[in-house]
Length: 136
Image 1 (cartoon, one colour):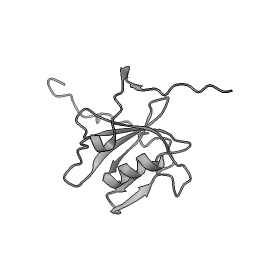
Image 2 (cartoon, rainbow, N blue to C red):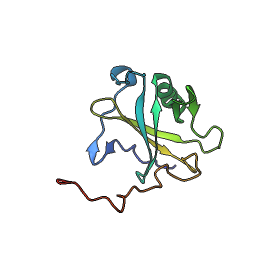
Image 3 (tube, one colour):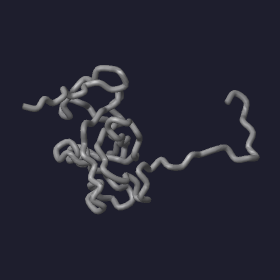
Image 4 (cartoon, rainbow, N blue to C red):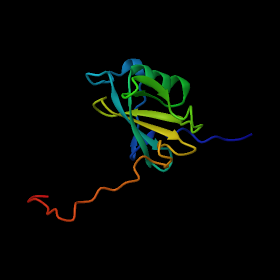
């Protein structure tokens, strides 16, 4: 008989309050969208940031894979459906204002369309001829 670990109902060292989607007033913007930060479960690495509408959020919660709204194509897309790098959803967290989501996933491969593991592979630095302004 195998034992499974109890689900982790904490985040950032605090207990997570489990709430149903229907009982949460998720605040979509005037375009009907909400930003979703996608993190690798276990490591916390930020893989990508994308936009969700109400339908993609419901699909994500019911299918267990990530769905987003493409602002450029004006259509739903299931992350990894073409590449095979499907993101398995572990849980979806909503912030205190209900206007941003964190989606913890198990992502088997690259999350970025460029082939990188994360979309955040570039670091911005100040230009060589730039001097910091006062108070920075």
